[in-house]
Every structure is written in C-alpha cells, then in structure tokens.
Length: 502
Image 1: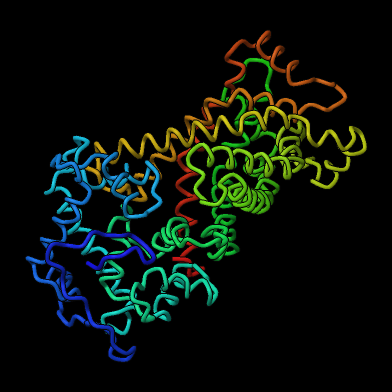
Image 2: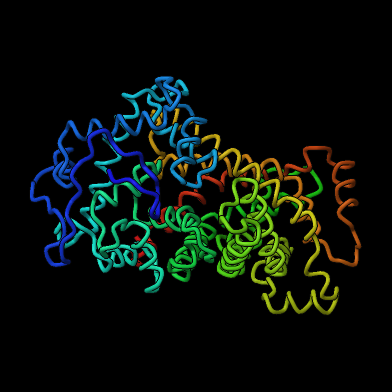
C-alpha cells in the first residue's frame, strides 16, 4: 500500500511494501485480471501484484498502526484515534460503526483475526464493484467509466465535480484509478460499497480533507434525480393512501364521536351514507396533497440540513430530528387547508348522493367562517410532529441495532428487516402522539363559530369521555400502519425501477 497524505487516508507503510502497478497510457491501462469464475482473493492479489506474504505484512502493519499501545486488540477509542492519525475527519459514530462491522463475537474489541476477516471481506467487496465499474476490463477505472456508473445510480455531476472526485482517489495524478488506489480510498469504509454510498462518502468526508477553502456541495440529493424520486414517492404515497382509505375514514369517524363509539356502528353509518364509495370519501384530496407535501418536506429538509450542519455537512441524529421536525412542520402548515377540507368532507353528515363538492365545501368555509378557519387544529398538529419524529427515529435505530446483534449476527439489515423496523417504530410514534391527532381532528370538524380552543377541546374530551376519548379510532389507525408501509415500499421500489433510478 502506498504511503502519503496526498488526498486521503495516510495509511502506514507495510513492512514489505508491494510493487506498485506501473502507470501506463489510457489504452493499455494498468493490470487487467483475466481469471474467470467467482471472485477470490487470488483476483485481488493479481490486481495488486502482491504476494500473499506481502498482503499479510500489509494488513499486520495496518493493525499495528491502530494498536499503537500493543494491547492486542482495537476498541472504538483506538479506532477513532487511528482514523484521526490518518487524517480522516471521522466522528465517534464512524469509529463505532467500523468497530461493529469488525467485531464478530460482539465483545467490544477487535483482535487481529477479526480485523483480518474484515480486510478479506472488504477487499473482495471493493474488487467486485471495481470490476463492475471497469466495463472495459483493462484493470483500471477511467473517468468516463466512473461518470457512467454514477449516472446509472442517479447521481449527476458536472465536469469539475467529476474531476475532483477522480483527483481525490487518484493518488499519482495520472488520470486513472487503479485498484490499489480504489482500495486505499475505501478500505476503512464500514458500510456496503455501493456507488451511491461511495459518492456520499467522498462528498461528506473527504472533501473536508483537501486543505482548501472550498465550498462543500449541498449533499447527494442535489445530484440525484430529485424530480424522479419525488414522482416515485408521490405515486407510492397515493397508492398506499388509496388502499388504506377505508381505515382512514373509519378512524376519523370514530375520532369525532363524543358519545360511546365502536367500530361496528361506525362502519354501518359509513355504508348507509355512501355504500362502498363512502369508505373512500375524502381520498381524492388526500391523494392530491401527497405530492406537494412530499416536495415541500423534501426541499425544506435539505435546506435545513445545510443550515444546521455547517461546513462539514454532518448534522448527526439530533440535527436530523430537528431538521426533519421543522421540515414536517413547514410541509404540514403549507398543505393544512387541504387536510382540514378532507376532514370536513369525511365527517359531513348526509344522505346518499348529497355530499358537497370540494369547491362548494371550501367556498362555504371561506364565506361562513373566514380564511382563518382553514387552520383550525394546526397547533396540536404541529405539536405532535417533533415528538413523533423523535420516537419514530429512536425506535427505528434501536430496532435496527437489535436486529443486527440478535438476528443478523452483525450483518446489515435488508429491505424486509428495515420495513419491519419502520412499521413498528411508526406505530409506536403514532400511538404516543395520538391524543393530539384526536384533538386536531375534532377542531377541524367543528365550525369555527363555536370558538373552541385547543385547551377547551382537551378539557371537554377528558371531562366527558375520560382518557379513552383520546384514543378513539386508534385500532383502525394501527391497522393502517402495516399495509400502508408495505404498499408504499413496494410501489416505491417498482417506480424506481420504471424510472431507471435503480
């Protein structure tokens, strides 16, 4: 492995350094590997022109570099110290994640055999993606090949950004990336080496290390096909809301009932008012507000991340919670009139076929109650956003960590595990803030001339219905969580494929 601080990690020199591949012209390139069959360490050794003894020496040297006190093991503090010595601007979380990936027996320490196993797996992983990007199979990555791989991953760069990316990996400045340079750049990256993750790693970590007064890019979302992702999210949200619309209508109907409420009579009432279509009343406007709500939340979140994160772009968990909560508040405020009209439509008492149109209902609210009526219940709605996001995020991370330790044996959670964790955490968060939802819905459903404030609704609900009144409709709301999350995920993934985002 080469030595130097040039543009990224300052790895220690091995005791017996391997012969560096000679830089050649772009046509002949570097050191192509012609072996067929599954990728093995023999491919890695051939690509590096390194013997097994030289590789053993290199890995032993790197372990010793971290274990500067000769303890015989590495912990998170030692790893963090070593990363800092390599001039990698890593925080504690990065060191902790690297420890988690290496620590096979989960004792909080990484011995040499565990470290060696990580190195074997990581170099094989890096070689596989290196080969996938090296479409000409000439043993090195050309800038145009890297650009093609980034574009296929949904990341668009201009010429200067591509040149900067290549420059930070290409240590000898010959305009191409050898596997040795690729390996050095990503060897200590603890996550899966997908092209998107690699770009995120370069953008958020290594741009800080150039020693110049450069402006850090706004984040990976600026380069991906944001509009396509927005379309995919909008279609997925619309599909899940339509599929769960009957449960949503039932929930709202139960929430506004101040007398004893049960599911059976509520279902019968909805059926009598509109038969089958009665269960989908209000779904049209519910679907219409998906796209603007997602767009506002998405762009508000990215803007707030830049404000909160400062120059390093890393806002951490508290920053994500704050940015997510504020973005949710901005989005909720922006589309709130649509939400209120939806609630009024769903709770409108009528005979079959006498439901007012959205235009007439909105016009009546404006004329009879004034424009402020469109924001009734906004305060309890906003009060629930940050607690919900905090509970959801904390529970999701805790469940993912538990799955890594007890189910996956330190492996990374797949889509099914992530979906399960998200479903449980979302249900927990929704349950905790549900009383605020009940108060909001009741304020939305009441005409503003009744002049009921949030405190009045809280007090009346508690006095007449007790604590149970704050949880009316909770059961159908929880029934929505699993199908809504599943449908959203499945449709979102299908849309990503159809829009060439995968």
